[in-house]
Length: 492
Image 1: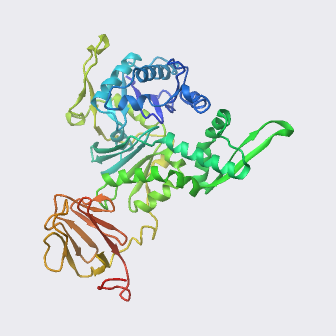
Image 2: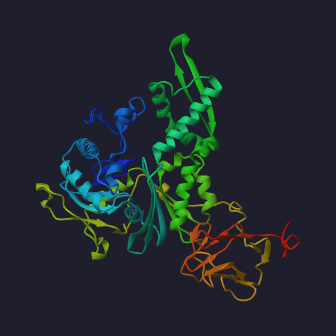
Image 3: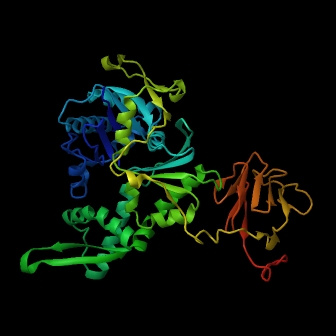
């Protein structure tokens, strides 16, 4: 029996039905008009800038929040889902597996269940989208961090992958930013450059703004790939036509997106155990972010990058929905309560946070590109080599053949931190030269951070790393110098 797979990623809302057809993917933009949706997906996106007051892009975002959403959001969500279901030419399966992003909690799933039922969709189960991604890709055992960028939010989810399943462990969510804010910043960049060069303001008119906005995905993807890209508008026709065009570099686009990029990177650091090689699972839409890949290479050397193709999760949800759980451990303990009304008489719908690994991995036409690629390039990560000295209070302390204790009461020769510092233990951590590497060993219950990542017991250190102890804490830096430059006296 076939199952419909539905992925509620508002930046790429997708549906798939078994192997019957390719997944259908479109952003969750609805031309709502007077509360009666007339267009959805790409046709609504083509009107979003020229008719901004009619465009709704926050209805799923509002549905996922902890507070009850506005009635208009529920109405628009039901209408959009019904319209997307009606796109399929053949009858739909009698049950669905719905993959939900990080921001949906229990009450939000209850509201979502009501929306699905009102649209005529029978939901068999909900599944965590990040865990489903790791399971369907059949990632090697270890830690994976799945990145998510919605229209109005960003999230990262840590998934632990074993030989039998992928299970969500923790998540970080930021209820600001997202694709729309990023594209707004790029649109402003193009406008400023065009005004400076040609004195033409493309944002003065809704129609020219829409035309410029429509070009952004292709232009930013070109800049990310080639280093620069041209974008422009032709005003008028015939002999009076005038072309306004500017060329913008990858770095210019990257500078406007840097705040969002850094927010995503910070969320990855919060979930990644310090120095641990992890697999970053990133939607293919991220490939159009100029400067993004270069930032990943610099921040996560030794890790790997796994692409998540558009529509892949919808096919995975459809495939998962036709399988029985391997055992009770594959099911979350919490379930979604039924809502009121006649349709709510059905049993509660389970939420899966653990998903059995797909063996073999889910097949995909873009198969070769689904192989994880290594991150980091030679010499790019602050030297990245073995550190020789620890900088503290104006001194460069040698690490060769040394054992340095740090805390409020370390052994003689250690670094003494002042009494009263929050989150600092008597013996907080130790730096040791273990011949093959300089290693940090954490002894505290408060935690020690390396480059913003909490140390899980032990971590190998590199030159350029920064240690943080306490909250807000003190920082120590690791450097690599030759013997002629090393000093054990205060540096000038």
